[in-house]
Image (tube, rainbow, N blue to C red; front, side):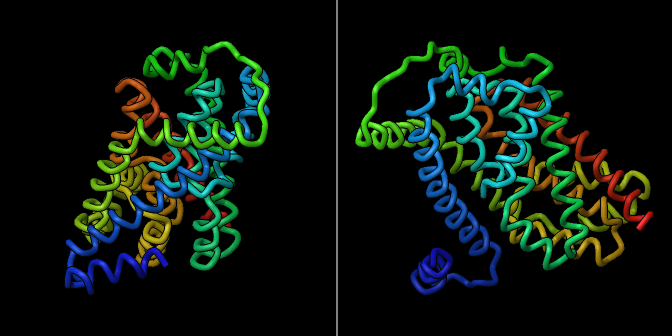
Length: 317
């Protein structure tokens, strides 16, 4: 329905050519912006509503304990939420403000864009079930391990001051009725969206430009010519790019069909899903540049390792 409305606006209302790059970029921008804000409003409202039953200290204890188990639970939560790299950031902010430790929230932030139900369905249709299972397992592994490593580096001091203050606020038990719970969820959604709306718009605008103006043929030729270095090259090429699940899965399929090794193609897809230039811009609202660089660096290394591992497994099958 949303796609049809945007089609009518751009092609019938403004008379743009559906095949032009300009109309493609505008379509991408409008669709993703509206979709992200709708998802955010609903999810942040739900999280705020649920938080009225959970004192902050209890939430910290529940999600912050258990070592790698806590990271795995956060990664699993990320896997079942339908977010891209940009739309997962406000949920990441909400979790931090609720007092959930950075060591855990990083696992959510990494896994949420790599795995979601839409991407899994597309992958089963394009790659088959075994490859999809390997991809999902790899995504959970990356989120769990990379999140744990990032958390162990004690990087909380590189978060913005208001995030730190909210995370360390004393837990206060307030008696709520249903109406006040709804109000709390609404206020939480409005508060977070007010803080990040401009970053969302700027990030999606950059993503729309990259999605429609970066030539796929150039990317393929670079991967094909780099041999054993194809995995890190593919990952580095994927990091600054941004695209929806509907776009990145077909790109990975085309690369694989043209002879790019499976692990290399999937590493490119993971990097494109989990890390992007728009995401880095949006994360600046939450953390200092040093922490953004460390987060991108460790996640990139984890994806590269996974790409080589998948290439090795593909040769054994």
